[in-house]
Amino acid sequence: MTELPISLDLIAERNAVHAEALEEDYAALGRKLSRTGIDIDAIKERVAGFSVAVPSWGAGRGGTRFAKFPIAGEPTNIHEKLEDCAVIQQLSRVTPRVSPHFPWDKVNDYKALREEAAALGLGWDAVNSNTFQDQVGQAHTYANGSLAAQDAATRQQAVDHNIECIEIGRQLGSTDLTVWVGDGTNFPGQQDLGRSLDRYLEAASKIYAALPDDWRMLLEHKMFEPAFYSTVISDWGSSILAAQELGPKAKCLVDLGHHAPNVNIEQIVARLHRFGKLGGFHFNDSKYGDDDLDSGSINPHQLFLVFNELVEAELNPRDGFNPSYMIDQSHNVTDPIESMLSSAETITQCFAKAQLVDREALHAAQEANDTMMAFQALRRAYNVDVAPILAKARVEAGGAIDVLEAYRLSQYRSRKAQERKAVGLGAGIV
Ligand code: AOS
Ligand code: ZN
Ligand code: ZN
Image 1 (cartoon, rainbow, N blue to C red):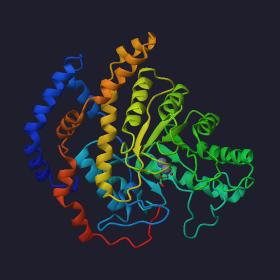
Image 2 (image 1 turned 180 degrees about the vertical axis):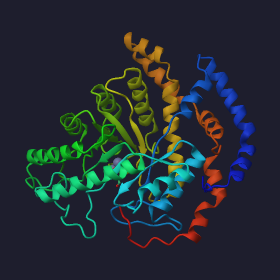
Image 3 (image 1 turned 120 degrees about the horizontal axis):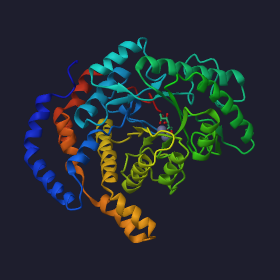
Image 4 (image 1 turned 60 degrees about the vertical axis):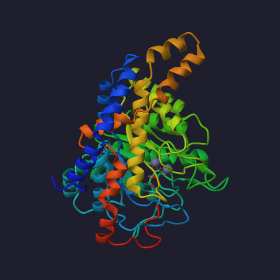
């Protein structure tokens, strides 16, 4: 293994400073939980088995449609992005996989890239295709759509790109292809709403046909943007219908920011699972639309309720239960590494809290139509501060007790600012 980006001595030194307090907090929480029959070590083991992937593009400052303000030391290629993702994994120990996006992360030798990641302690998650943007030298524009475009040659180009992504993914060791398209319209009448879906389905079925046996195709729906009047795969309804039409390897991916405000996302999760179509998540938070705010920064309770449905889903397996978890945020005002460390912590906290729900009490209250006690079963779990459980799992796996403190003390970003070439103004807005 090549040298990891953060000094092991620094992590050990800081952990030693925090160890006694952590032991005290963990023991106190253990006593509290044992009063309700919960074994804290068993919860810690489950937390230790949890992981969430980070997106390669999340390592950069995302920016908005209006501007991007790069920070010194920001990564500008997949090698640098991998290094940053390795920092997140080294400190948090819950983000062992990176989800690449093509052609953004294109290289000549994917075998070498796979080895490079492995040397940094990283594997690969879902491969993301990109037919929402034109690339230099591309034969056909995506201005009027990609998989749903009127023009057959454009659709074929988008299909070919997705098939190329599968091939790259095979070399990296991925087993999922995530397809999000920006296809849609900005004016009533611009495209036929029925026929554009037909075209999408026909093109998507060609990609589906190219999937290896053990692969899944994850369809990511999004209500609006970049199209503001209609979007081809706009909601979970369109997504599940398309996935059902394509076949068993097609599943639905829920990006938390891709719904109308106040939509009951946890119910969508339960619905998709009911029909064996829950494929995965892009975690983020939103206040108004697809804001891509940090996970749980606005509504951590919703995130907890999503995980509560996931626990229920696991207890009631349908057609397989193996959702892929990934962060998909745009970091506009923070250091992306810090945001992802903080988000990975929040996501894992919600996972842990969902494990604490007294399922017997919940189900009994539901049976008895005892609304208040059913709600309290959830509320009791949500109110527990699970931070000591996460910290203990982390330190046992070699991570840092206080991840942000260790990161700041490492001065990683300022070291990279010396080494890396600066991001040009206006570059890489995604
Ligand atoms: C776009 O809104 C989606 O969230 C996609 O997941 C997209 O591929 C990703 O955010 C990169 O732009
Ligand atoms: Zn997404
Ligand atoms: Zn999005």
